Length: 122
Image (cartoon, rainbow, N blue to C red; front, side, top):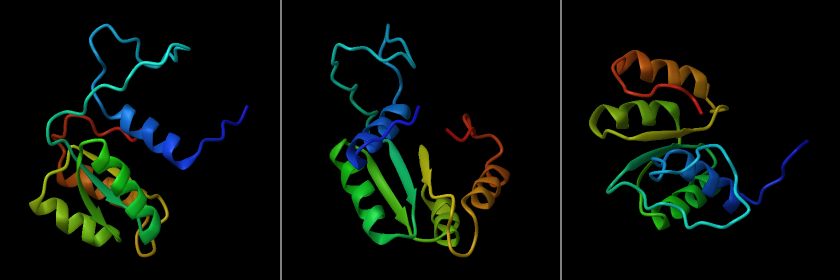
C-alpha cells in the first residue's frame, strides 16, 4: 500500500516525529479523532540540508510557522561548517546532494558528535 501525501502533510508528519510525545500519548498509533499537535519545545533548532532552493524555502517556512528555529544549508559542506558553530536539535537531510551524499554527511556528523543522544536516521 502506498500512501500519497501533500507536501504540507508530509512536513507536518516530519515535524510531529521530532517533537516529544505528549504525556499519555500512544506513539505510532493513528487515531481517527483529531488532536492538536503538541507545541514544539522552546527554541528547538532544526537544520535543513537541501540543495533545491524552492524546497528548502518551503521546509523553512513550515517549520518556522510551527515555532522552530531553522538553520538552512544548500550543501553538505555548508551544513558541516554551520554545525561546528550552531548546534541543532535535529537535522532534516536530503540524501542526494550534489557533492556529497546525505548519508556521507550523516556519518561525518555522528563521527564529529559521537555523544549525541539520538543518532538514528528516522
